[in-house]
Amino acid sequence: MLLVVAIALVACSDGNMHVNLPAPVQSTTLGVGDEFELRIAGEEKLPTTFIVAPDGTADFPFVNRLKIEGLEPQQIAELVRGQLIEKEFYTNPSVSVLVKSYNSKRIEIIGEVKKPGSLPLEPGMTLFRAISLSGGFGGMADKGSVTIRRRVNGVMKIVKVDVGKIIDNKMDDVPLQAGDTINVEQTIM
Image (tube, rainbow, N blue to C red; front, side, top):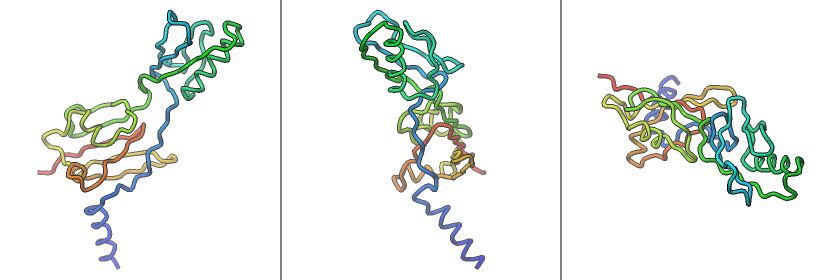
């Protein structure tokens, strides 16, 4: 029985073509530090670029400070539109919001990469892309031993990935989500 368990563990770790990690949860809500454009049709002279302040707010022309942290872009557009109507600046304004950068959504990459640190999460970002943005593998990197840590429903899920198999097209790249931590381990000499 012990032999069967040992064989199963080796098979899972060495021949793993799929990573046992829940699919990333994509979120387009805005958070502190995110930069976005807000436009009111016909008002080209008003400021258009805004950053979510540390208290989760942003100051807009005519409507002043509004709490926007945790809102989707279309919710922000509707909120501002409603305030413009309520304060009688416009009767039927057209308001649009476009996110320029999600600075609140980040991943951490540590270990044997050339530039470890925090990276802003790009839409559709994968493990291989994160390693590339960190300058690539360091000279002592063990491409077969890269750990991803992801919090799922309050529980830390940890998986080991062989990035060499991704490079060799033997397995799919791993999609990332905000809050993931990647550790590129060092080879043992």
